[in-house]
Image (cartoon, rainbow, N blue to C red; front, top):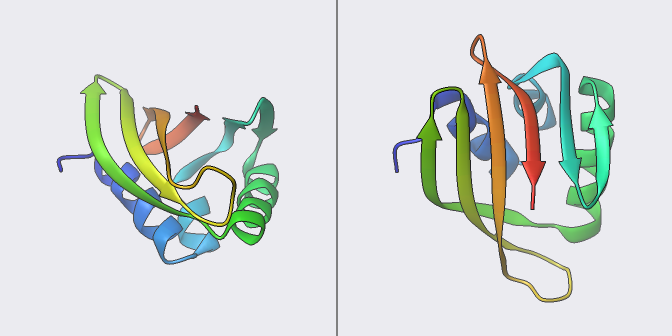
Length: 106
């Protein structure tokens, strides 16, 4: 699948449970919106990601990618320790200057 490099790096770091590599993909003031909560800045994104990994022990497998300029939509199969697993979620990324500036997961 042809994904922008920074997004590929995000999913690879997520798969390896590598918080530092994952956080390196984000701009300093980036935000993540997931489960109706907004996590602004790298420190808040780290807290969100570590808590989600610990709670659900999930793995996200990208299935499909659509890129339009600085936006990328990724459909991914997410499997883990949560009700209804696996589910297909949409990861809506915005990229600027080679870094993720926003990620909305639905």
